[in-house]
Amino acid sequence: MNPKIGICEWSLPIDGPYACRLVAELGLSAIQLDVGPFDRGFSKSRPVVQEAWLEMGERHSVIFTAMAVRVTDHYNLLAGPGSEASEIARRGIRAAIDACAAMGIPVTMIGTFEASTVRNRHDLDTLVETYRWACDLAGERGLTVAAENTLSVEATLELFDRVDRSNLKLYFDSQNYYLQSGAHTPDVLEALYPHVIEIHIKDGVGGVISSALLGSGDADVLGTLAVLKARGFGGWLILENYYDQAPLGVDEDPVSQIRRDIDTIRRALG
Picture 1: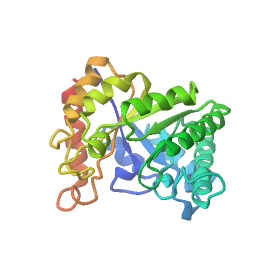
Picture 2: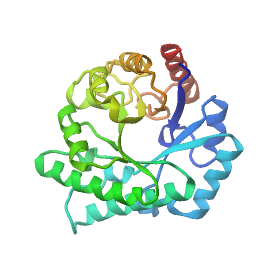
Picture 3: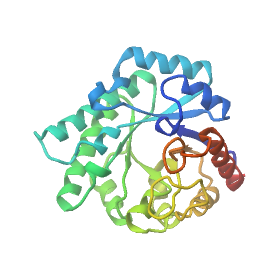
Picture 4: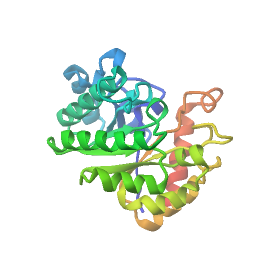
């Protein structure tokens, strides 16, 4: 199995389109972008920013697999119609879908963490309607919407059944399920595999997000990789450890740590 490995824009130790050069030097060929924060006007929605990323991506043979709408971490997407927070989050989704269409990026990723965490049935009902809206908006542009969350297997399957849109997929994560509920991630992956389009790969210890290199934490990342190998997964694995942030990035060279995680994936899937 020859894994397709990329990295999140927010996991890199360098900001801006020049990151494409570093990614290529690492032997990677893809970046997942973020549409940008609300207080900076969702920067990837601006043609001048899009053109810069596309130019550098073409120069270094780096593609962009998906665009995240991380503004939902800070503004509650589920706050309800007419609320300021929900409207800002929806503006971010619209901006990301437009940017994906303009840049030829096939997937818009919408996460429901932190401010947008699903806490009850009402939130789940709101999420169903929200994803229907997002999928219809993206579908008009020929795009896929990827849901990232830590819902139970049962709740995730209910979500997909109720949204009932062929362009809704799951953005899986190798640590988040364990962090949220102690779930055994490989088992969750087995149950949800038919819906998975792309995967964030990170690890951690002691309930701390992104606090360990792959395979050295307690999320059983190697078990997750084993499931992917057995399944013959052909999609993108996107590194999401925070290599230049504490606790990983305090005393170590982030580039060296990225290389170590790349080697771990290749050994596990080789």
